[in-house]
Image (cartoon, rainbow, N blue to C red; front, side):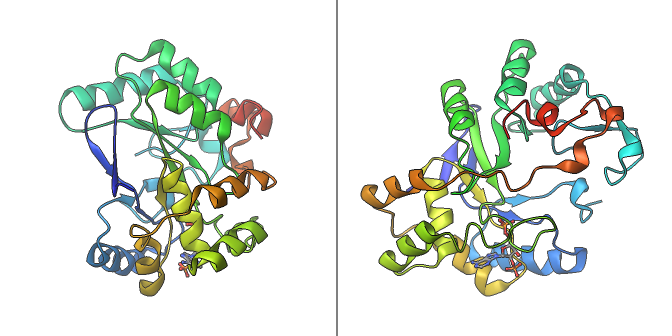
Length: 257
Ligand code: A2P
C-alpha cells in the first residue's frame, strides 16, 4: 500500500498524518516533533483546534471571533469562501485546496459553482462510521477522503470511546494479524483509500500508528468490516444554532446522520 495518495492536482498527500485536535499547545510541540522523527510528513492542524496561531467545516464566524461560542456564528457563504480558496490555489500559495465535514449534498452544491474542484474532503471516518455513500461520491468526483478521528476519538467529550478500538470485529482482526486494534483501524482506512489522521500525544503510540505499511488486512478479513453497525460518533451539536443557519443536526449533515 502506497505511503501517499495522489490528489486531483497531482500533489501527493501522505497516507498517515498526525491529528493534533485536542492536544494541548505545549504537548502539541512534542507530539509533532516525535511524529516528524517517526516519519510523519502530514500534520492536521487548524486554528479551530486552539493550538495554532484557517477554517474546518461548513461553519462561518464573525471576523476576529472564535468558533467556541455560537453567538459568533453567521450563515455560511460557501461560493464566496471557495472563490477565495481558488485564488490561493491559482496564486501558487496552496498546492491543493479542500473542504471538511462536507455531506454529499454540500459537495454536489460546491461542484456546481467551483472552477477548481476540491482535492480533499476531511471527515469523520473509521470502521464504525465508514462513510460508504460519501466515499463513493468522492471517488466518482476525484476527491480524496481524509479520515479524522480514525480511532473513534476515545476520550473526547461526548464520545463512546470504546466503540472502535474495542469493537469485536476490529479486535478479532487485530488478534488474527498480531497487530493492535488501532493499527487495524488505520490500515483498514488506507486500504479503503483514505488518508488517516490519528491523534496521539504519546511517542510510542505515534510510532505504532505509522507502522502499518509492511503488512495488510487480507480480503476475507476486510469483508468482515461491512458487518459493523454504523454510528456517527462526532455529531457536532455545537454547530446547531439558528444564527449559523443550521437549526438541527439533520440540517448540518443534510440528513447523513
Ligand atoms: P493518546 O494521545 O494518549 O495516545 P482519534 O485519532 O480517533 O481522534 O483518537 C485519539 C485518541 O486515541 C487519543 O485519546 C489518543 O490518546 C488515543 N490513541 C492514539 N493512538 C492510539 C493507539 N495506538 N492505541 C490506543 N489509543 C490511541
